Image (cartoon, rainbow, N blue to C red; front, side, top):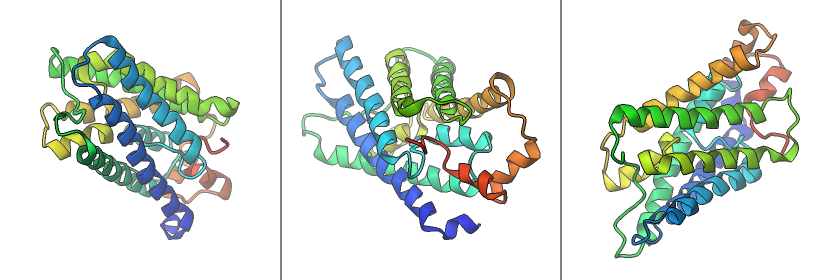
Length: 255
């Protein structure tokens, strides 16, 4: 509970909130774009908007909060014992509120002729198929985040770009099927504003389960750590040493 008393903690939570507003504003603004344009270049524009928004936010806010901007990423880092339960909880709340606020801003400034708000919907596939798409696309994203935030690797200043390209990749592959959620907060924001929750559970269960599976795969099969689990688990309650607690803000902290 000691970290909740620090300004650094609340600055990080605020960074997640503000970063999410900007991310959602840019992404949804690109998504609603020209409602008469259904050609592939529209999908490319949306994919680049979401990916570059994440990359820019990561560059700007990575040293403050880690720039998770995604509950699935936060859950993956929590499952990796890289942040405390308390921090993860507040991050997710900030991300959800930021997504709702960002969606409300887009809703308020959109043209009167535009009724869309970029709500994610299944397109010609079943909920089960949508679940599989969301799971796999989020899996590659969280694996990318875990890889570039691994202190055993030196990715230099390319971490934000790598994560942004991972988001672009997910959108290029998934927009035609699910609208590409891969971020429960991003899906929740516009759904709340327009009160549209058809198959909404798909966009929570798929990405959140992928975040946990990605953490287990990376930390126990692909790149296991020698540190005992009991020592790693101390970070969940922020009761480890100073060095251990230093990874409470693990993502892109050196950028």
